[in-house]
Image 1: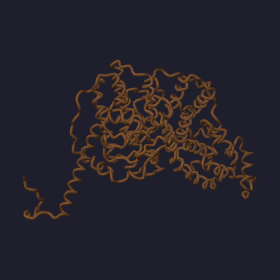
Image 2: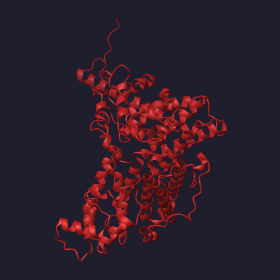
Image 3: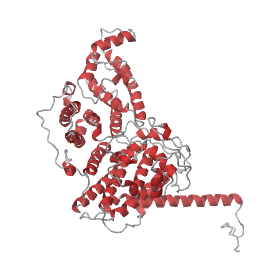
Length: 580
């Protein structure tokens, strides 16, 4: 037998270490090995991040062979802070800083999904059926990828958990929790052609063979997990993403039309989560790669289904609205680039501009004012139950793309113009949600809107424009009031902001007729669905209306009771229902 190995002092070669020194040295070795492992994973991911651009030649053909360029010294040094910030599996997940003042910072709407402990399961949707909950709530640690065989009984697991587990060699219990989480709906949005599916993978009809493709499945699980983690990187999400891109690189080298379509779906998933988390660099990289892949399919004669092209179009359009960046499609009406020429809608037959916008047209972009008239026309088509869904989709796509690509002109006009652009986009989007349903897009825009409103409250920006301010606030609050787990945190922030507005109303000394201002808010702006009728269901909105109603009114006794005030408010502001 070989002699046991002894650790020795460098200064005293003949003496061995005591037990405490051995433990300290072993702890140091484990720490170094863990750091090297994290560094290796992060460097591999950094190499793969440019995949969507560099894996294609100038002619649109996929390059053969795998790229194995070692990272440069500069790249290694730049990655060190990222490695140090990776949370360990023993610690809780990091939280996004709540920064209402930064409209372009990543969303905090996903914080509601995060459990207090980083290794806990995703929170369940409060609207979901509790009967589908697995019997064993314990999960493997989220700091590493578990292997098959470590889970408990799967009698009550998601029906596709075991299938996915066999396909990509992950623990079905972990997969089950991810598929049942609230984050599934947001992660799967670019692939859905109908409303919420609550973890039903059969609804992903755009890619019927998705359950057989490893890259697709890794990307789906990564998207769900990353959203659940409030867009904070963990070791587990990093490994899932790396595996997804590794498998995607292999798929891109295969000359198979079905694999090509599935690769589009994989990139859509990765692009979607980048949009949602506000990662501009990664979003742009995926958009570039997706565009080149579409070019390759076109040059190669690969026929893609129209539903897939629709998904690509809407993902680009919605993604641009979320991250506020211009990508390849530099035309206001770019629908024809993917789906053929869109229908022209003459401006002469459009409804007239509502008076509320006419009063403030000097601070609103003319392009946005035109879009408002288009939205009214869209609402007319939806209201009469138009059966031509293609016409409705053409019109909605035209409006939203115009609003996206007139961002610069609105920013030049000022903060009010930009807030109006977001609000009109929200109303247009919510007017016909079956066109492309999203649980997150309107919330993200409402979050940006709130950031700007909060930043300008108490300034002279809204002086003599209180009705316009109240319209913007009502639009944002109506979005946050949806029956959606992602809306909970946003609704709470809007409620807190409304309390501040109620206090600020006392300083609106230029407002001489509060009742008229409220009437303008209700009658002379645009809304989606039944927002006006249900506005008093919003927390604190009734109190806000009462405060505004009392502004500048000499005929109202401040000491009147609530019943008398409500009666007078009902008389002067018709079509209200305070107790609906």
